[in-house]
Image (cartoon, rainbow, N blue to C red; front, top):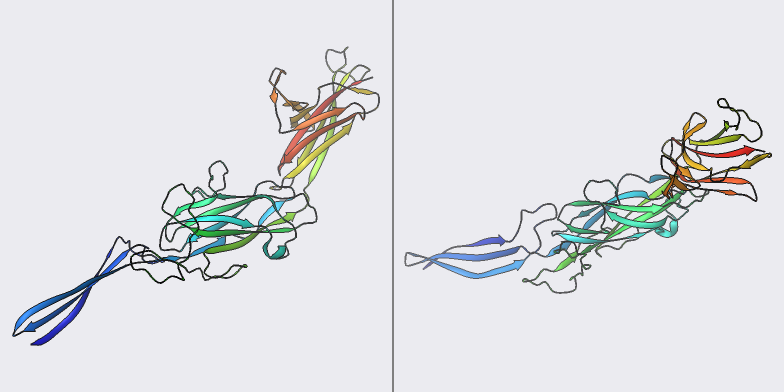
Length: 363
């Protein structure tokens, strides 16, 4: 009798070609050994039992900011910072998302204020923030080696002394497998003996920066909001025009009983930087009487004259001058006791102008 050779054969089932994350979790790896030999010159073969095991889940992720800090204006609403979350796990996973706005006690590169009204949005795929389309606040069914974009959106307080706010995106690996359902957070099986016929979870996120712990299923990254511009080139121009005098058919004069329209044009000449809560105030001059319901905000300005108005004391006007529906973009009022006209513009975008007009009669 003579012994010949021994060899093994192996096969994998339910797997996909591995990428950087490795062979997909749940892939069944099967191995069988073969022995060949001869007895009295006759070739013989023997086959071992089949040994199988499943590939376990190596849970890992990377969270990173996109670009540097976002430049914002004082009082700005819905300021956006963007991050990427990459699934380095060898399986399709959900990711639960939270934030921290006070990284290391606010000591992030001199951070000295806290952003308000923070919200999380997951990009729908176009890499542009749009609250009407970016609906989810968690990452749903992200495949191995794929990356999702996440937006943190916040309001900037009206604090003239502040300059920088930090914000941290925190992502936690969660169970995948069900579309449009936030998976439960993964639980590590590191303290359990390996099981050949089950998928164990091993956390492999070795990063321990930004106050995180290694191998805990979390990843995080820090970005911020920087107030770079503290003022804008805002100017106000006032003009007056006699509308009618009750006598002249054309070319009315400023005689007692005449109606005079004042036009206030406020202009923000600083591009890309909005001015918030712009309040125009004007006390009507002596020897005049305010014409009720004559305040019009959002007028189109031609030079220093208001030629077309869209709002009457905070109420929209139809083309024929009749009242339609309230328009809440601008508000205005007249105080008879103080004889003060007030027009409020919530946001005056950079490079734009808004006009307000009101009328008085000469006593």
